[in-house]
Length: 123
Image 1 (cartoon, helix red, strand yellow):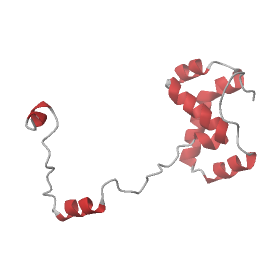
Image 2 (cartoon, one colour; image 1 turned 90 degrees about the vertical axis):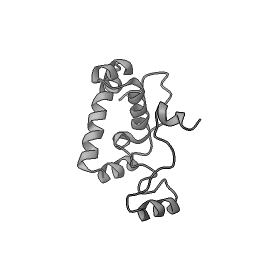
Image 3 (cartoon, rainbow, N blue to C red; image 1 turned 180 degrees about the vertical axis):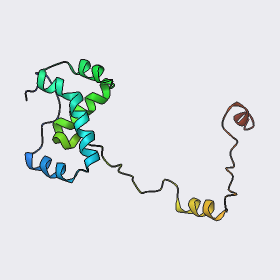
Image 4 (spheres, rainbow, N blue to C red; image 1 turned 180 degrees about the horizontal axis):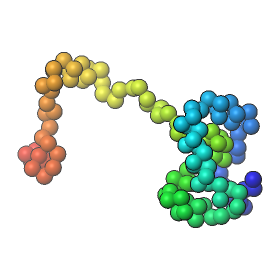
């Protein structure tokens, strides 16, 4: 698998890290990684321009560029969807969550409804 000249992406990581990561992927994540690989394959194996490969697959170029960077950094496992870093965390302060839960569903936002009439009442 050759890399086109002038391509400035991250160097691949050690081969052992990819194998471990691939083994931990679910069947669904593995299928997603394979489908993303199919978009990148013409570019990586046949030397087709990434723009053409992305267009042919109906994928935005920027998305294909991100996938390519992830593939080059982490191999096939890099094409799987990553978990969000903030997964399971609340964005609201605990005090506000307690007020909302304690309101019994009667909590009303003190701000007017969005839109021209709602914002007009602020002025």
